[in-house]
Length: 246
Image 1 (cartoon, rainbow, N blue to C red):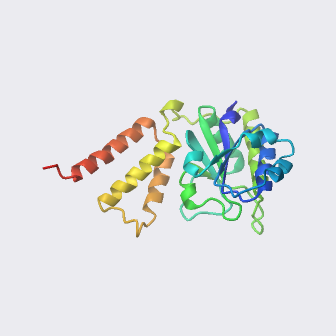
Image 2 (cartoon, one colour):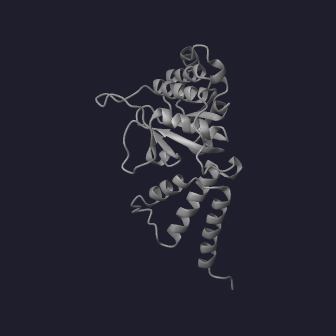
Image 3 (tube, rainbow, N blue to C red):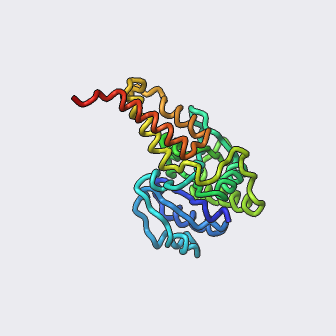
């Protein structure tokens, strides 16, 4: 089942009740892979009470120091946000996002990422995602409780799975050919380093350059061989700029 390949990632959760409520929402909808990024210290007892029987999900929770590790091995990632961003990101409604995640999870690891309760995902965290999902609400009161937001998206994932998800995009290649999150992240850091070295990118006055480039590459879904080619080009540029040893 595709749901077995989908992980729910909570970034910097601060309340034990939300962690427990998330576990309950997940188990209701046949999701069992909960990942936490730098959570605040929380009471296991309070989380377990809110989980209301979903202790097996809590007992298997993975805790990571950063989002990069939490997404390790993922071929496709969607982030959640209640607010618009200045830079447009591929954006989906909950049902469409769920269908896309289920289709991708049929071929490898996928993740749905939720930001911290008060601030949501930062732009830097969103850069790790291929798309963005916003849950429609009353514009006058758009803030959703974290566990409630997870419940809505978990329901849409369960519904998409039960209906067979959506057909994979026509240009989708074999799962082993898609570069995973960690490989793409290393490419981005390499690209930024080279752009700084050649004077094209000034980190003191970035002008959103890296954010725009990341958004560009996120749209094309880089393959492993493509990442290797691009990093080979970057390495060649660095070698040409390095004077020979005398």
